[in-house]
Image (cartoon, rainbow, N blue to C red):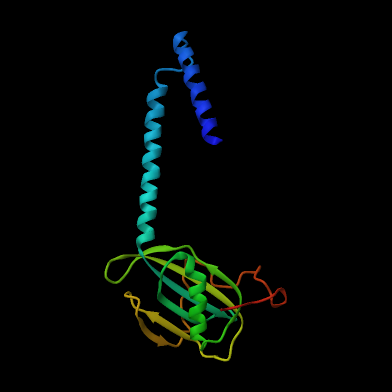
Length: 192
């Protein structure tokens, strides 16, 4: 249907342009318009090609996930440089990491926020895409010990340590609970 419309429109344009040329109405289609349209089309095609190649390159980069789990406006669990397979897995992987840190017990959370991915460089000079996830807990489980897990640039688990009280928040995304966060009365979501 659409293809037929494109064909009819193209045929009408060719016939109309031919009539204009036959009657020498060149003032309607100036001589400079053809080169401008051609060059403009080439620029648009190069722009689209460049952006597609850039997106393909960014999608091929190694992905790392940093997770901060908050309770009472302070960081309770934190994970740095967790390996990430794709941007679609951010929330699920962050929730699974939080569950593992909590001794395989589900956590009840109020809200989560996925930050804007940031392109960076790892210790060996390779480009990586860093993703940030923040989760606000509604209640704590049985495990009341805050901790921080750190993964190496190669994706292997390196270290477990207590969360530092002087932890500086990541600047890319907010660190306090927003005023429009759902309350306990509005419902909760269990981490699975």
